[in-house]
Image (cartoon, rainbow over all chains, first blue to last red; front, side):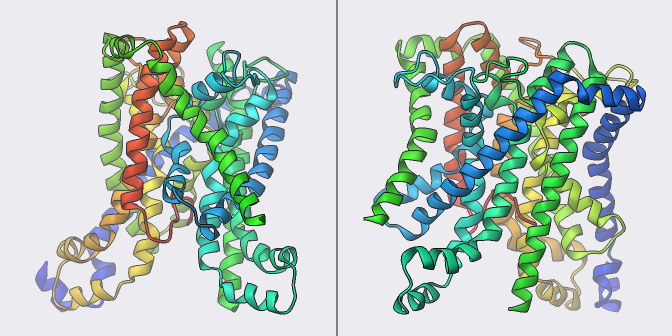
Length: 276
Length: 264
């Protein structure tokens, strides 16, 4: 092996056996773990023919669940865009005692199992809650649960951008007489926008698919508080895997679209960087 | 004044959404004293659920760590057919509903599936739960290691190659020390995701008490059986693990403060 590297030092990287094995392992692993199950899902969703697929995804209960899921996820994405940016701002630009603890706690929704998150929210904001707010089994509860699990996304994408933002621009604008609002709108916001958008897209994708945090607190009433993932779960339990697969394919398409959107935002940002 | 207003908005939001609920779990679990909570987490079903969760995590995390490092190197250092597809598939588990993941495994390995006739049972058994957990926790190591590999470049590896180092010594002496913190951070994220997975495992496992029940499934099952102390006590165990994860995350966190592997 040493002698080969000596004779082919430049080409060693492309000619090494590690590269070929690595590519093979990566492709095989992904095929087995990700691609094959998803192929089976798509195949099963159309196994009953195009009509069965259409029937499954236009079933009134499925349509109600999908509409609710998308509406709740859009609401959650918007709240995240505003409050996530504010929290990121406070964590970067403000100084107060206990800030590092607050900063660390932001990741809690990622570390805490979703079922525990749901149970916790139900305890606090449910019928036996100590604060007198009872939102259990309502659509508000769904939004609340989704806000919990999507909390880190916008904050963690905006934070690094805000850290790197050159404060001199803001100071220059202030010295020229710009108001605080003008500075935010004309200087800070345009710089943060790509990060906000990619955080929002991640939060939206996560919200659309969420199950564990929602299942206990939403009550899962068909047509009113049943989200898409809970509807799919119900179809599986009642022995209708074809219908479950069809609605799953709709969610799969939404996930792909969200990932494409994030990729698009990132490519635009990198192009801007390259020009500047 | 405006500064305080924003600070108050941010802190109240975080307290209402994170702080208060978390305090609540601990309070509810121990409101009847330590005894009932301890009895609940040391009951046979709870201990078995804990064991199952640990076994799944001990398989899923090393598998995804090994795969993550290999794939990150393949993505950053080499061109190969299907690279774009590999990139897209690595991100997909971040955006896909765990219920859809569970269903996909059910349809592949279950009755009437393409891989139904295996010599061992996959769905409603441990292998299926492991596969589903590997799926949902797959992106993290890759997404932590990729940016670090891009940043360190290939100069040192090439220098090692010109000095006659083969691919393995190059990896072990040059590449691995450079990426080890990113790998560690990715491992923490993967572990947290594996311990906490609920939806996908819920579908694939069949939720057989004392057989295919993980910690998270145990929490739900206790809650549905109106054993609230049991549900809260198990939740506390999981919450303590989550807090340990946060501590580990702040130790291994990359300096830029970017997290979650949600960038490419």
